Length: 110
Image: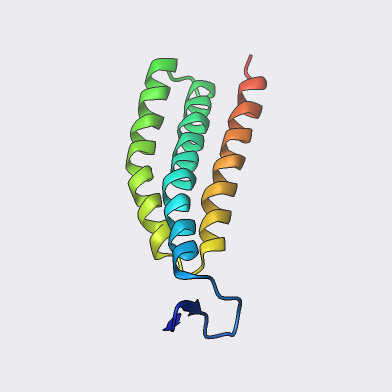
């Protein structure tokens, strides 16, 4: 990306965003997208751990510790990814899929 004047433009000639909108999109992806992804990971990990035979408290603790490490990494990745849309797709979409998968895994539990 190159900065020209007041807008950020891609080298491929794609659409450009005003700098404030670009920054706002990245910050919201880092805050809300990373949180949703970590929440989905914790929920899905807890369900998988319980289905694998772990005690429910141990499954929740283990998956929460994994999510605790994942949250800052995902938030930093939201700023490092070249395109904002990719960050939102991976973090927001991945979090939504993980939460849906945890609900499905919870429904199939005996």
